[in-house]
Length: 175
Image 1 (cartoon, helix red, strand yellow):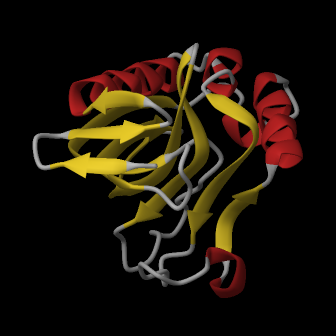
Image 2 (cartoon, one colour):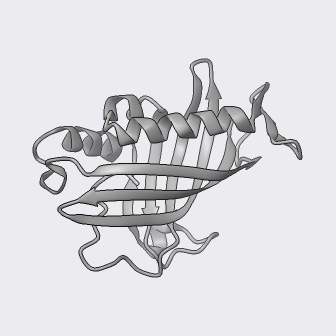
């Protein structure tokens, strides 16, 4: 059973997970992504996990599968995305964008299952590419699972706070 404390910790799958532990996990993920180390990034997921970026019309409680998504990857598509980004076939990211990520306002809450819990956090991703500098702002709505090897994503959802994407803005990188 997942229980929540007002002190920034959850009891999940027989272990206590603290907010600083989750923050360290998210900061390490941001570093891995900014270094384009996609093998290490994929290792942060449990097999069968999902990666989602709903469209800008998304509202909490809506299903991104029904309302549309920029990204709606199951485990197989997530692996294919990583393989493509590591190859020269990702023309929109060859050479790679330069990114810088900020993660803040991390909050833990109960999960939908006994072995997981939810994490909400705010993000800003700065991206430099082709002479442009864009900022992507939003929040994360993740489901994490504690394992013997550390925390893992069951669901990694990035929700943009934008009303729309600017002309020429691309989501060809991991948000």
